[in-house]
Length: 453
Image 1 (cartoon, rainbow, N blue to C red):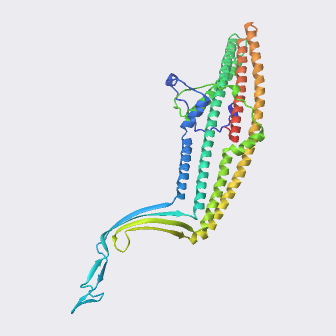
Image 2: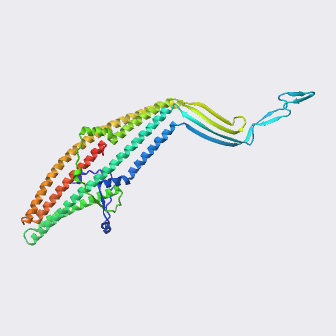
Image 3: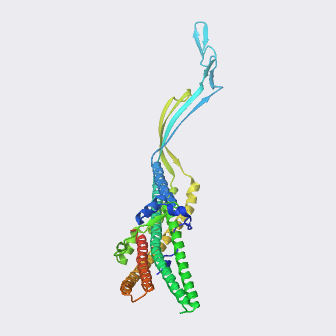
């Protein structure tokens, strides 16, 4: 079993090779456990931080929309200097005359000019407007914002699951490659030993030189395979360091994972399907888009109503003798844009179409999640079978290695036989470990689908 069991779906950037040089080996290796790697990735991932900020933005948007329930308060003031003032002129005798004996006194006795204001004119006031008929529309808008807030939260949770799974795949992939490197190193040593024996035999004239060329090619092939595994390990390690935010030039040492904790008792498939309905992030998001479309339709229905509300306020002015200095007032306001009422039908049809799209998307997502759960269950069963078979191979290889060691102690076989048994044992252990880790990755995929990861 090789690392091709790990599909090329790592959610990380292009690989960055370890810098070569003596300074690399002088660095202290950082011990990294699986949980620490996940925590570092969640802390240092920029895209996840963007998701978190989007959640915060949508939360503030809900608060902003709720403010519209409150009365609109408009306060203002003004100052005006008038160069020419209006005036009222009462001509002499406008109101008749007043007889005093033989003297007639006109009323007024002369022209009177009354200025109707002051050069400096001050005005200030506050107005309150409480909407009535648009409360339903405001409420629908708040619900839309709440739905967007819920979508952002689920998008964040989905991103977290993807990051954790990406770290898990890289971590387990590195552990498997470590085992395969151990196997490859034993095979290289075995090939060199066989080549040395043939070279000695050629020198003694016991075999032909062509045999040495074949073994030289076999040795080079094993060295090539070992080099490929080391390069692959460096690529995976570079991706893991980038994902966790560690320095590219740092050296990491992976802590082993307890193999016994990798295998779990999985629930029945019906239970997984039921859990997915309530916990799957994609299903939650698709359902929230349906809810958002429903609220948008509900909001459009209120657009047919006129905007009716209550008014109240207070004004103060100084500079005009016509208007009172202090004035409190109450009243009602009505606004009705008939053009909006006519065009609203088209808007409503658009939102009904959006709801149908959301319903189709939800149905498709639900169907896809169900298929993926069934597929994950099938892969888990296959992985369990592979684990059982790989475990048998390990048992048989362990017994064979024990026999070869006993024969070597008695001088009944060669060192190459023991080394070959060790290489076969390392391969069996590598396959067994890879089967366990492949099971674990499939299990994490199932948990993500269920919403329990």
